[in-house]
Structure formats: C-alpha cells, structure tokens
Length: 427
Image 1 (cartoon, rainbow, N blue to C red):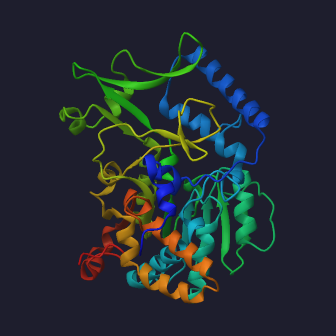
Image 2: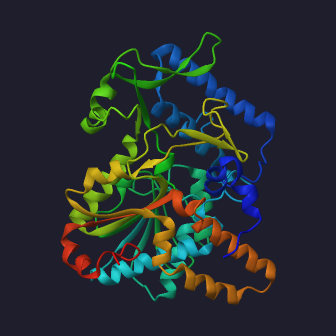
Image 3: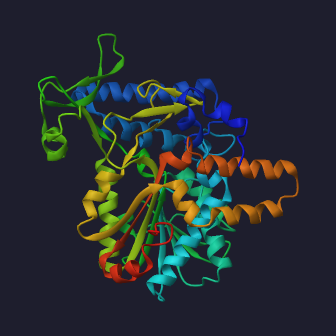
C-alpha cells in the first residue's frame, strides 16, 4: 500500500497518538457551557484538596472522568464520539476491526468445543459500534446461542448504545443486577450493567477496546538518593493545580511498587493502574471458574516503558492534564507486562502482540480486498484504504496498540495443538 498524503498531516510532530487514538474532529458545545462545567469541577477539586490535602493522580483522573460535577464521560456522554465529537476509535474507523474480532470470538468458541449457552461481555462499549459489528458478523456465521452484556456507567452512552444496537428503546430497571435489557436488531438478548461483578456467572467471552487506557493510574518518581515518592495533584501559591511529590514514601509506594522495580536502579519513574489490575483479575476469576476467554485491545507496552505516560488530548493537540479538568480525555499507556504478571501463574496468556500482527493473522488483507470490490466509487476505495492504513500503520495504531488474550488452563492441550489461539499462532 503506497504512502498516503494524509499521513504527512496525521503523523507529523509526534501527534500520531492524538490522531489515531483520539481523532478529534471538532466540538459542538459552546465555549461558555464548557467553561461553566469545567469551573464547577475545578472548584470541587480545589475544595477537596484544601480539605483533605494533595490527591493522587489516580483520584484526579477518576474525578475528571466520571464525577457528576462536570466529569468528561458523565457529562459529555455520547457527544465525545464520532465525526462531530471529540475522537474516533478503531471501530468507528473501519468495520473490519469489529468484524475480525467477531470472527475471533466465533473461531475460539468452535475450537474450544463449547456448545452450550455463552455470553459476550464488553467493558466500556463506547458508541456500541464494536458490538454492532461483532453481532452482525456472528449472525452471518449462523451463531444462534449467546447473549450480550455491556458494562456502562454513563447513561448518555447507554442510550446511544441501545439506539444503535436495538430497534426500540427500553426502560431502566430497578431491583435487578442489570439496569436495562432489550433485544438487538439481529436477535441477541442484551443487558446493561454498572459493574462487571453483576454479570451472571457462566461461560463468558470478555472483550475490551480502549478501555483500560482511560482507567486511573498512580504515578511514582525516584529521587537522587534512590527513595520513591508518589506524584500528587496539589495547589500552588497562585491557587492553580500543579503536580508535586510526596515528602517521603507512603502506603502507595510501599504497597504498589514491585520489588523488581525497586531493585532496577535504571527505573526512575513508574506508574500502575490498580483498576486495570482489578479488571484483569475479575475476568480471570470468571473464566477460571465458569469457562470462557478474554481479549484486550489497547495502546501500551509490555512493561518496557521507564517514564510516565499520562497525557490529555483536546482538538488534535496534547494539552496539560491539569488544565480545564473535565474538558479533555486523560489517558495513560497500558502496562501489559504488569497485567500479564497478575494472572499468568493460573491462566494461559497469549501476547501482548502488535495490533497489526493480530489482524494480519486474522486475515485483514483478504477482508480488505473483498470490501474494495464492493466500493461503488473511487472515493470509497480511498477512504477504506486510508482507514486500513491507520489501523495497521507502523507509526499509527498498528504498532502502538497491543492485543492480549487470556484462557483457562483447562484448554492448554487444545491450544497447544493449535499453536495458540487465532491471531496469536506461533508460526
């Protein structure tokens, strides 16, 4: 595939991360309303710091993302996605992303020999586009059993997901583990939950895409004497938010920093997402007890990064994460190496591998050729090629994004004979 001129714009000045992962394309909210909500959240954060003292980076991220007082996801909801919103994720970029993940789910169901009821679970389903492409693919493959379970905390996003996936709206439900239920346009029962713990205990396929990167992280720095300090958010003398270090080691530095990190004196900075670790442990416990498997797609590294990765995106630009809280997307690289270390003693973990390698093994080249024959105009063809290039590009999503899967050890013999699950086969 030849070089496309669009990439001269997309990837210059090291902005490719902001574009490929956060394809900002505009903002339809008024400047006054944005400032009003941001000011309310900022005032709340300042009050909290004045009352309780400096807060961890993780607490700051949690407030700016989901606080009912101007949190990014809780306030903006569905408005942050799509061409008129703040960013576009891979499922919105091209249907091939969801289709090939749907094929992966189908292929693993067939090859694990599971023939009973199963449930497909997605955490952080965004617009619902990924699940829409997956369920459409599963129906084309004549899959009849199964139900869909989405974990969503934003009411606005839940509404958008239901509008896309279902023919008719439903009502919120009290007294159940789920908050809403319906039937998808292609006939799958679908349920929404607030927490992954509320999902029924049975054979499950857990998937997530660009979910873990938005979870809060605790950050740490080592001083010249080799002692570790936690990074805090505090107020400076001008009453503005600023980063600062704890005066000495604290409960987090003692409890969260692994021994090997402390012993490696070349590491001066480190960050960890407790919430990401909790999620991986939760889904691992489920598939170990009740059967199933896990697929995680996100941008990150295999434990090799030695500096802090926290950043915020707004309007094609990287902005300071402490400016205008609640008005931008704060994110951090996923430490797949850390997540893998949590569960590899009791499960089979494959990856992380680069996204481009996973989709190459899943046959994206063949799917692309098939879709190109269906394009009615040259413009459609070019748009499809550009989307695929962004998904697989060495400088874009293809290298930065990683894919990891987790299986119970009961499937070790089957997976060994296959040389790994689909997309992860050892050639």
